Length: 163
Image 1 (cartoon, rainbow, N blue to C red):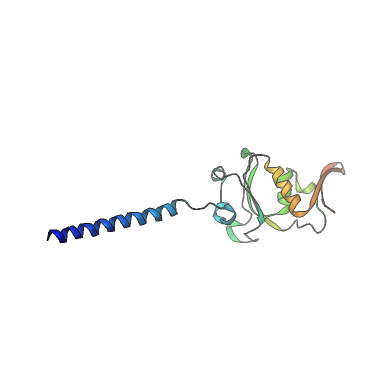
Image 2 (image 1 turned 120 degrees about the vertical axis):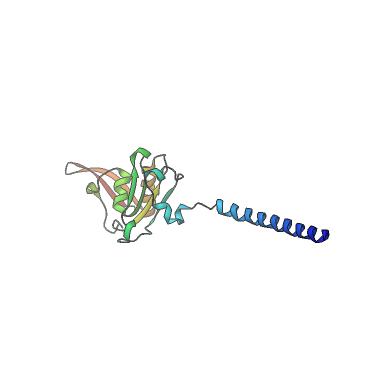
């Protein structure tokens, strides 16, 4: 009888140890998920408070929310108090030129063939010259140069394809 009780106690003890060990592994994997904003579309639904919690990041990509795709369409979060950081979805390239140069699109001259009407997503939470970072990326991706001119008495940003 005593031997039966001892065997039962040993089995219960081993079962408890295995259960706790297995739970620890499961909890460890659940607590530490990999954060990848580029592939996690939920991160793009932010407001100015949650935007402050995002790590410094820069993503410039063709939109994941095509035009007229419900509540995600043209939703923008910008906050000048955050040194000009921006999270924008499904916006035309002209919008990003306007934001990057802090200049109205009515005074930006764009060459023919430039994909100005194509939509992009931008997540830019860098604090060191974020507008200049976006300017450089647009120039690099689309092979353009920009220059300032005065046309018809107004300051104008001229966008040209590089040869």
